[in-house]
Amino acid sequence: MKSPLPARPVRGRNQAPAVFKARLRLVRGAVILLGPGKADLLEAVRDSGSLRQGAASLGMSYMRAWKLVQTMNIAFRVPLVTFVRGGAAHGGASLSPTGEKILALYRAMEESCARVTTADLVRLRSLLRKR
Image (cartoon, rainbow, N blue to C red; front, side, top):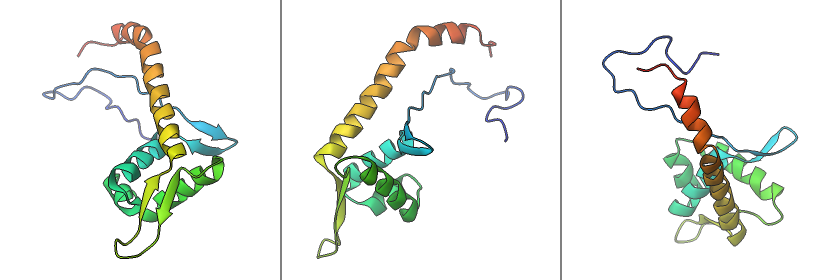
């Protein structure tokens, strides 16, 4: 696997500060029930009113988005995404009230994690090589 960091600094580029990105996942066995990609998909569906448009906005295939939604809908007591088929408006998708609640809880957990690790991140950054 190729390292995401260059072997040496690239000269002439504005180097952004190092940031810590926690990737929270709710898993059952080997199955990811909720994580950053699924949360992004929930937001995209909520914002677009369509699974197809939401997937496209994330650069994701419709089939991949459909499988992710199916995994979430099966995992939770109530489906997180609901669908309306066909008709004059060509159907659509929306978050159920439970979907809205799950998304809000997940984003709150991300924010809590960022808040709790702020002091450690400052200490970690102090050990980085200056660019």
